[in-house]
Image (tube, rainbow, N blue to C red):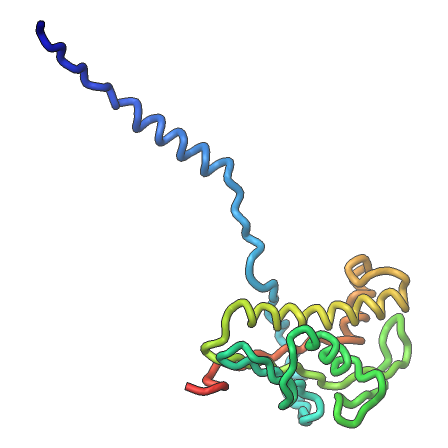
Length: 193
């Protein structure tokens, strides 16, 4: 009995099939590009504004620190990240005109008329080099949510709709009512090492 020789498998078309599968997966796979922080760079100030330097007092700065252990320190007091949003809202709005929160000034705003708004309210965020990315994003989200909730509340009261549904002129008026100034300092060793 003679042994039959095995016929070699023609693998010439295998490369073509693999290439077609690669193209198929590249075309049909969706890539999530909405990751990270949605931030726009601030507009350049007018030339006459560049010469004006408003002095920012300590009461107008809301200091948020995150250490290497992902612990939050707000205004020199430990705080849970879940309480940060309400604290930031109170700072931005200063509804009770407290002396340790940003000063209120009278301003003439379109659609609002003469109203009291906070002047030079700045949220200063600084994290440690060892801070986890997850904690950094949580803090960012809470600070942005505080501003967005305040803008939605004033939009509902004044115009009967959410901020996102307003036309551009009304949105600008609301932005003047609750401006967003988030200052991020360079990370450094806050909590040791």
